[in-house]
Image (cartoon, one colour):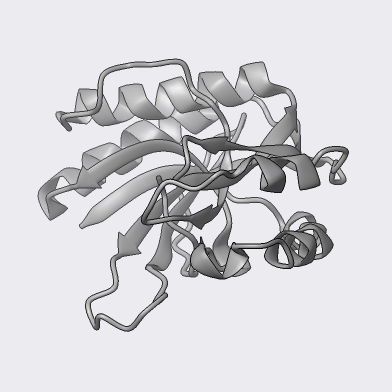
Length: 202
């Protein structure tokens, strides 16, 4: 199964992006972007790719420990950016240092489970809003997000999420995401099974 670890913003934080998204979709060329579904916007911490079922119990145990080692911390949505001309995203504000430590610990949990992770690089928090199949000038979109700052919330858990890529070939069909477990930060406890849908994890 295709898995990643993530921080899931609360519904209230995602809803605050609604008016911003409306402005973005009104810009010239917006119809050429593939916009992600707001229901499962998230900050990917560690993308693990295909994981054998037999490795999931150990991965889950290691992610639980990573959560226990990290105290809850404040986070919020702020501004936006882009990766080249292919991905548009919303940024983060708050205790970014702790967010990065959590991402490092999630990646270490995956590597210690035996998963072949990408080469380590500095974590850049982002919540993907749209993709493009061709290179576009996304600067007008990031400029339109200048000054946006959402209400902070307390990150209190780490989530393990499964992604199911579209197979029907329907244009603009979104991947489906299922939250397999949630691990409390800074406290003991087992991950709680859950389900949901979200946006692409990379």
